[in-house]
Image (cartoon, rainbow, N blue to C red):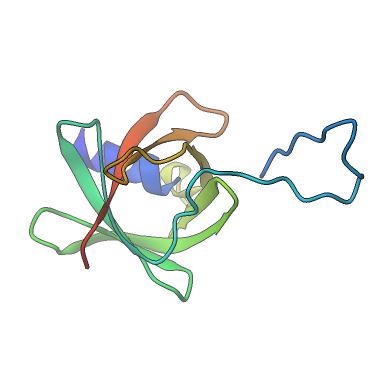
Length: 127
């Protein structure tokens, strides 16, 4: 379950809605967090399944409980979407994107897979 959760999130397209009053060149605005460089706990709100570190150079690292790297790849984000492209060519190594909701008071937020059913609570961690 834990490895599947790590792969599901990291294997973590923007869809914008235009108002009829907005010019066609308007950029969609979002109040949801943009995931940036840092370390995040991924879980269900009570249990942490994995930790993921996002680096400024666009690489990411999935970490086990001891802090050892168990997966790597590249990430990109814009507005309320973050996409992960794991290293490898297998079925579980394809790019997946996640839509992040606005953060709660503690900074954590729900992240839902674009085009999928998975969802996780993501909590920023102190580096």
